[in-house]
Length: 396
Image (cartoon, rainbow, N blue to C red; front, side, top):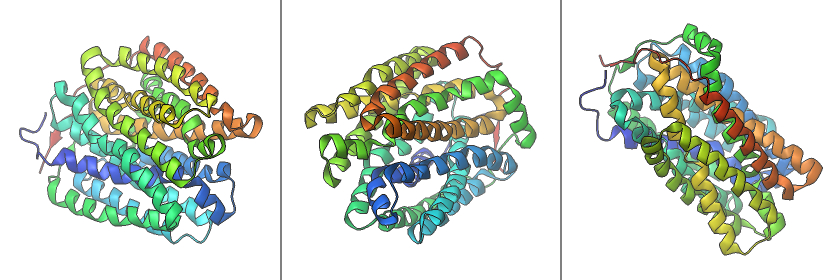
């Protein structure tokens, strides 16, 4: 049962907190070179920080969501942000690669508590016909992190050092914690979830087939996206300003894609939306293997690629929530985990491509990954998960 009058600031607050999490999570992508130079590591080795984060998120997010299933949502959301704050401080003070890797584990645990619970809160408090747009709004912050957060962090890392970039993330966590504690209703709960719900979902092969499409779609993109900075440096001769600008263009496209995704999913349904996005990625990513190209064309390509790459989340989450019922928090946690499993696999695959074929082959292999995602969504659509009973939200 949806709340009769959700706080009108709740969705913007959840979105703003997701911005901080998105900036802290993907910050590494924009500063592979400064990190590598300072820690005497290659770009492929520094890229393993994304893999560490992804694996930790995939393991810890479903577990933490299940273990905190009977705790008020405000406390869980605030605890997730506090843990993310601690991780950013640890990263800023890290003496070497090992400590930095440990900070990524803490960051993944905090984000893995916050993001899926925020999505579940939004989905439960609004009627079914508004869910795709509301979910797109909650995840808007993650997209804006690509527009402003990651490019800004990249600029700071190149100019003042990568530790300052993590320090900024820590500072930004503070108002988020305050707003969550003061604006999220105290005692807000759903039908309790526990480890048994996690086990049930993991054993539901049709649900897992639907969830893991997120990983295959994201994984295809991260074959290329993880190494976009060194690719631009090698093929276009870009330094700090050029890399920051293209990341910003990618972020602009991501904002458009996030908004467009909710509209497409509401109008055309999840299946046609996700199928079309896979085809678009198959066609767009191989174009990055044609670099160098004029900078104006590259900026336009980055925008279009991001529009289609970030339009999938609303449709995919609407698909899952409509079937999840009271298991929605666990299903959303697994879906969020699939993002990072895909990012880990995509980053690892991209590293192998670089090692054997060079940076120029990344676009082609990203397109091949999108073709696999198309096969995945087509196959999973033939075996949809059974619809569960609805989820209820209570406060008190």
